[in-house]
Structures are given as structure tokens and as C-alpha cells.
Length: 130
Image 1 (cartoon, rainbow, N blue to C red):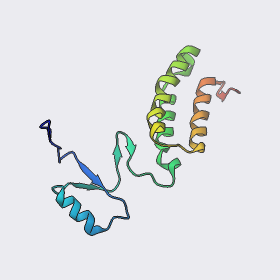
Image 2: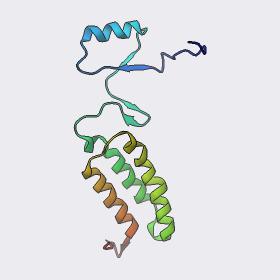
Image 3: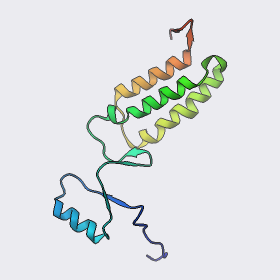
Image 4: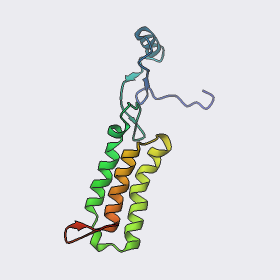
């Protein structure tokens, strides 16, 4: 390379489609210096392979948001505090994922419902109507 930088082969890996023949996979990995072959994993927090069920694949986002909202003390926050928490934390978790993938409507509705329930809070153990 012109800059003198080299690829760190210990941190590098290669992914092939199911349609690539096995002999081509072996030839390519050997040509790249026996680079690590991966079949499924995450890159920058997102899955490298998207299956047909995006709702299941990205369900961890919904679960993570639900866990965070349960930890926050809803009664102790003002309306402005709730808004800041929702926008800065929960929406930030979605922004990067949604810039790369189209999430299912069902998953978006579930996340929206979770956020609305947190926003409106509860009275006497029951969620308020909104």
C-alpha cells in the first residue's frame, strides 16, 4: 500500500454467500492467507446476515429498550425529563439500525407502544389512557 498500512489478518474475516461453491471459497481464503471464514456474526452491532424474519432478528432492540425503560423511575422524572430520556436513549438505539435496515411494521409498532406506555406512565398500577 502507498501509505505503508497493512491489513491486520487476525482481526479480518471474510463472508461468502450460500451460492458460492466450496472450491471457490477454499481458493479465496487460501489466496488471502488463510483468512478467517465467518458464517454469521455482527459488525458494528448489526447482524451481517439478514434472514427473512427481521422481527426476530431485530427483536433484541425491542427487548433492550423495554429493559432500559423498566429501570428508569417514571414517577421521579418531569415531562421534559421523560422526553429527553426517550429521545436521547431509545431513539438513538434505533437510528443506526434504521439507517441500514428497514424494520418490520410490527416491530416498530411494538417499540412505539412501549415508548408511549412509558411516556404516559401509570396510576394505581394501571397504564393511563393516551
